[in-house]
Image 1 (cartoon, protein in one colour):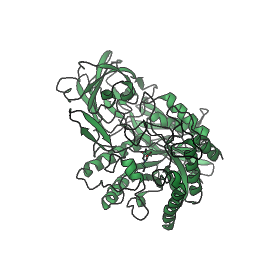
Image 2 (cartoon, helix red, strand yellow):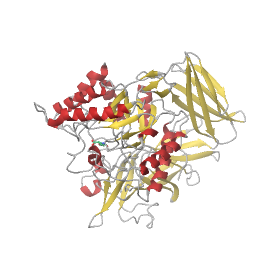
Image 3 (cartoon, helix red, strand yellow):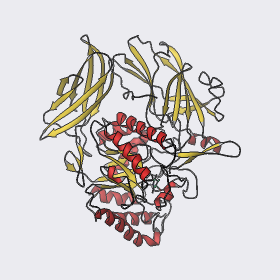
Image 4 (tube, helix red, strand yellow):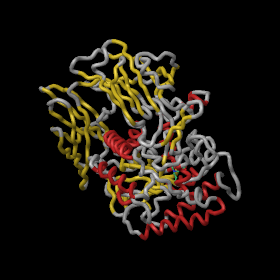
Length: 598
Ligand code: CKU
């Protein structure tokens, strides 16, 4: 297992990065016999497969779309000549959910977790100036020790089927970009920053991890390319006079140029775009640069027609344009860390991100979202497999924080979505996760998690570990929907009054609320599933939110319609989008825009 994440690739005097995206070869391995048969050297009967993409929606047959088990990719790639003072790295944005990477037939890396980078130092396995071969053995099975959680059903004919404990399609494959990176042997491995602002000035506290004995120098340039500060040493402080702060929906990005010197010569360099800003939770307020912000926006998915969860810059661009149009300022990466390009865009656009780990489905039910929505208790943390899950959970949180810690947009980390939280087992489990996570972030950002209906103020064992409390609530949908919407409002207020009575003095953010709504359906008076009902539901929820001043944010569920497993609860996917799956507004988008533009 790999301990650190290779920095996002760039090209400069010392680093060469080559995108390996394109058509690769692909083959299912339903009997898991590929390795025995030498598939790491050569796939016997492959089809072409675009990278990056999920494989599921590219096929026209059920078996391929719903395939669960082992599958392989292979690709031939050219490695330029390199010297003995350089390293050659393969970096996958992610491979879902687990993978072994072979280069020229030799194992180069193994990784668990489908939403964070996999990097392999392949220097010893490749030949410069020649074509080389990479094979990836991937697997998309779910279990109670994987993040996200689920199960595998083996059917009569021996075929496996994924049974997610979560409400999104189990898309898999090489869903993010693949890079070949040539870096110096003595290189910058990682860096982090933290900020202090006083008056017009700011301090950028930095620290750089590197290989070799060289000296580190850093310079900070403003958006016009003028030097704002410089310093020497592997860690130190950059003093910035008249600092331009990164603000919500008003971003300002400096470039941090890190150089590593050996014997007076440049050994390595790296450029990072950083934003000077502070984040904190104080009383019931969320503060950015010392000023309260009210979060407006969405829970999202990486999800689109045909490409599934494959990264697409046009989709990212369109989503940001739609979010900006509504007046939003925030989104949650529900329910897994997204491709890094999302965070780069958010840094530029001044969006706040609640960065979430794939700890979803920690409740034993294949209809978890319905069970949870109605408050039906399902146990989870008593299982003997929990220690293994815990270890996996903590390691993935560490990988997420390592990858995302320098993005100004990331202001909080969410370490779970809707687990069982009322048992003592759950309390212990999450105390351990949070304790470990608190040591990982150099910026000490707020930590949180999203709670479902079972996590009532009287019963929940987990909310005390959170710096602010995120609630997913569906009063007027899963609870007292349609003709009972007045009742729903009464019950909603009743729950909020009970939270208020606890006088927790922390911010509350709604990280989910919404109704399934078909773009085609209208009715007066409204009924559930129509656009009119979605509007009325939102108006009711907003009335409730506006009645409590500790409520400091509203992220609707969901930004757009998205694909889920099939079943009687979903009409070809979850239709709670404010936008359709093709990113056109439903009527509720105008309701949100009216509220958020003010
Ligand atoms: C959403 C209690 C609700 C759980 N929540 C999780 C999310 O992933 C689902 O899509 C509910 C829903 O039911 O639409």
